[in-house]
Length: 107
Image (tube, rainbow, N blue to C red; front, side, top):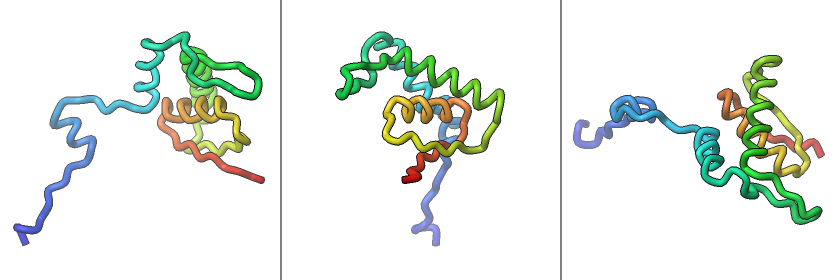
């Protein structure tokens, strides 16, 4: 009945209605890079090393380019074995080229 019907719109329809471009994880991260570029994004306690925002951005852009230009996958399965930086880079790279990232653990 009409009293119980709920009008729904998809996020893409809502964006068209508001003339707003939806932001991706990668685009939000790129905005952070402009603000925090040389600051540490990931710090490793075991060896006192770190990776800054620009390094993550460059590595994810390079991986995205390699995946897109060489393989054009529909999804990526990776066993990163707890490598936080590699996982962050992979997630951002997959997001940049709109493919699914699926972390796996083969152990």
